[in-house]
Image (cartoon, rainbow, N blue to C red; front, top):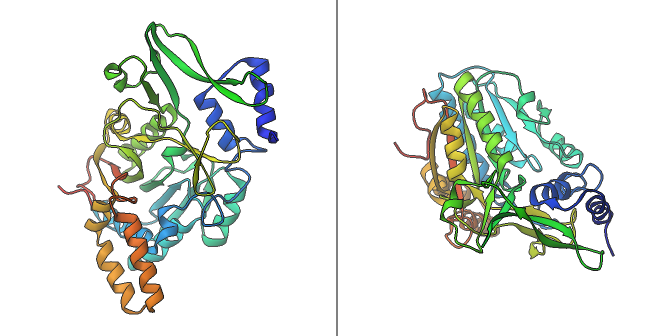
Length: 357
C-alpha cells in the first residue's frame, strides 16, 4: 500500500513534472509531515542503522580530545562554541562534553544543528546547556569547532547520465501503472550545468553525482572558520577522490532497500565526494587536512590505548563489547577504510591532531 509521502509525491509529479534526485531525497528525508528524519528515531538496533558514537564511547572520547587539542592550538579561547550538525540522538555531543571536563578552563558552549522535532527531543534528554539551531547561520559569531559525523552523506545529490547525445539529468517520475516511481532522463543539457569535476572522465553510460548543498555547507563553515577562528571535523563514508558511479542507497532495518520503494520509510544516503568538499574549503580560504581513513585517524588519537584502559575495569562481557566496538570502527572490512576523516581549519592554526604534519 502506498504511504502518505508516496501519495503526496505522486500528486506533486503529476502536477509539476518529474523530480530531480535532490528534490526526491529532500522530500523523503525532511518532509515536515512524513519525512524519514522528521518523524522518528532511526538509530540503533531497533531502528535502521547504527552510527559510530552508538558503537563505542571511545569514538566520542577521541573527538573530545581532538577538540581539546584544537582549543589549545587556538590560544584557549573561553566559551568555545562546539557545533554539531546532524547530532542524531546526542550521543556524540554528550561523550564530547564529558571528555572535555579534562579542560575545565574551556567552558564549552554546545550548539546542535537539528531540524527534526523527534531527534531534538532525544538530544534534550542528553545535553545540558545546549542551544538548538536550524542552520549554521543561526550560530552566533566566535571561535568554534564544528562537527559533522555522518551528516553530509544525507544531503541531497543530483545525478547525471552521460548519454550518446550528451549529458542528461536523472529524474524520478511516476511509473507506468501510476502507483510508484521509476527513473527517467531529462532533456539533453547544454554545457552540463551543475556537473561535477569528475564528469570529464566519464564514458557514455556513466552516472556522475553532485552534492551542491554539501558543498555550500562546507563553503559556509570554511568562511566562518577563516573569519572567527577554529576547525571543523567531517567524518563520513566515501572516496578520497570522486569518480563516476551511482552511490545512492536506501537502508531500512539494517538492510539495503530500493531507494524508490517507500519514500519517508527508509534512510537515503550517497557517498561523500571529499575531493569536491576540499576544493570548496580551499576556495573559501581555509586549510584542509586529509581525508584519512577513520581507522588511521582514531589510532593516531589513541583509540586502542583508551580501549585497553576501559577493559582493565570491565567484566569479561564488557571487554568483549569494547573489542567488538573498536573492531567495527577500525577494521578495513567494517568502517575503518570506507569512512574517512577530513579537517577544515583556520589557516593560522597548526595541523590538527590525527592528520600528521
